[in-house]
Image (cartoon, rainbow, N blue to C red; front, side, top):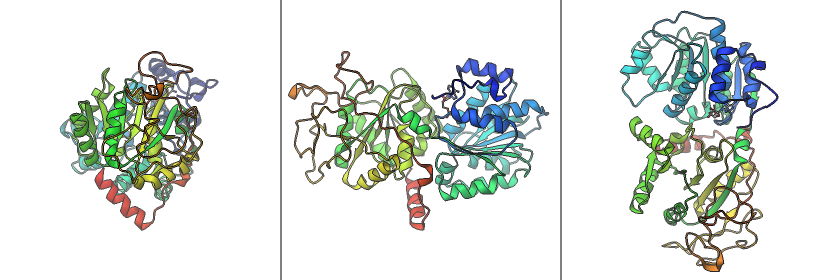
Length: 481
Ligand code: AMP
């Protein structure tokens, strides 16, 4: 977490109960988005923040909003809330709720969270006496509003988080309906990781003279992520994954698939290979998701197989590796995925499996990153190789391979395989490496030599276009998630 050491939370205008909570959380100094946003939100200004998860944006809106409520205490009204936070997924909603609870614990802030997929009764009961902060996903919120368990007509502060994902998931109409029920006189804070036109339009319709803040957070987290790409046919990917997972350094791994179906299939494949895994995607019940996530946070985590939407907002430190089993449709999604590792100052590694058809997607990602992702030529011999799908000539200069793996690899060429116990050529490589070591290894499998981390700074403005074709594709894509 990048923080600004010469700025204190106190100097931003936060008061004692909140400051105490931050000490308990172990926050020493504000992150850039917090330093920029907090004073303006405290002053009552609307905010348009282009920021991703991992930047500390939750505290950037939660801390000043708690202060705003403390500055103007009000009796809670049954079924009403003072702050309404809209989030696209249950996971994100849950995390925001936890953050409000942590930051507001000395300030008597009452919060609750509402999302679909579980019994609504406890959620309705929690709203009976009213709360300060209601965090909700749009669909379930509308359900409860329609049943008169929730009333949002006295909301003073609205936060819309991950607006781009909200649109992606088809919540735009729900969001507009919810916003139309809110008082016009309110403070609105709007966050999105990317800025496609639809997001801009939605923001314009909701905000009044907002302060605009842009951060390049993923560049920060991704500086500690070593990226690389393997070229291989789709049908060999599972073999490669099983092979790489033998490496002990792959201690906490998220594998991204594009579809729910793909996630389930991969789980079965890993199961057959005796590898423990858990899958989270849109078809999983809330219970199943929570179980999978808590297992993933445990000391002996299973491999977590996730679709993008399900994974959005997962905040687990010490993810050692992200594997892009399939490339995402949108280049920005790649950036979100790899931001799951290399957190909290740790190094991490993102390995991408790319087949022939996915190459245009990889190009789009590299264009967004403005750098080539180093090619891995140490592909082991795998069953059912497909001679037609040859690795390409590496796009960028291969870094950190000491010349050994450089150049085009021919089909069947095992020179550079050296993975998982193949000791030929005198080099035993794990294929995957977690912590970068200088000159030698510290026992266990010899880590794959480091490719230099790619510092990435996505230009949010280059987000996807909104042609009819793109929209159709997106819809199709959404159904598969
Ligand atoms: P967010 O971007 O809000 O999802 O936050 C990402 C992670 O950073 C969470 O685990 C927060 O607890 C943590 N965090 C937020 N602000 C700070 C801070 N100022 N210092 C240290 N950690 C922070």
